[in-house]
Image 1 (spheres, rainbow, N blue to C red):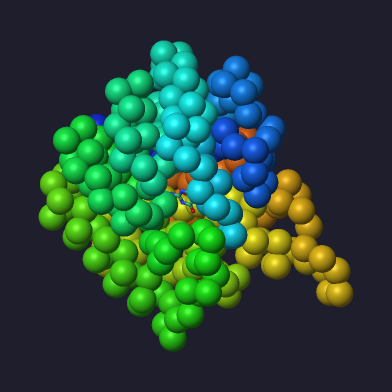
Image 2: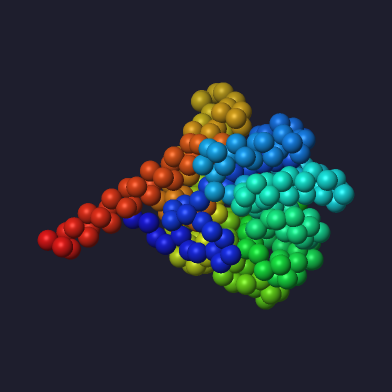
Length: 295
Ligand code: PMM
């Protein structure tokens, strides 16, 4: 039932879909802004996510919610670097969520093992050279432009084919810029220049991403707007972001079943359970198949 998840050179990861827990060191992220804004609170939260079953922790200092404006570089560094350093020192596999080459570079020097850039290297021309020189894995997400006006870019005639083509292009640019192809992870960029129907169509086509781009796949649906749309009762407003965790875990199960390399989530426990159940079902299926072969 599972297609191969793909190995990411340079990362120790489990033999199942991995779980990436999110630590947003921001005052304004859409679902958890301001909750762990001091370094000590952010580190505590990251360690808590690991205790709940996270395999990696993604640390970010800039909100990318629709309409968000940018933080300056010094502030982003101030938010992110101490948290990365402390979590890495505790033995956590840390990813840094940034569009800035300088932040990526300093985060890697502080112990980050992976760079997660929602712009896929397009926001900062220095990013691809920094990642290439550092030799770390790189998440290339589908991106059509900055958060401030990205919703205006959510127009597609065939969303799956267009996102696939644009993502292929971003991957090729990263590899042409010196990033090791075995270290590139792809991400369809749910909610980024996408309406709810686009996100749902992309989730229904995860196997095409795996097959056609042939790279490990990260799925980051956690608490996003499209889940609020799906869960809203007729005539009522969507539930708030914090009430979308069960729906998020449902997507984690789907992503694991489709062969995703990892899911990126705010609330770890339910998704950690979901990916383990999917793994157990897959192993039981394989064992049954082997037994049939023996008979
Ligand atoms: N979404 C957000 C932030 N970082 N990284 C990747 N790779 N993919 C995403 O879809 C993504 C991301 C926005 O969500 P948040 O504000 O809850 O972190």
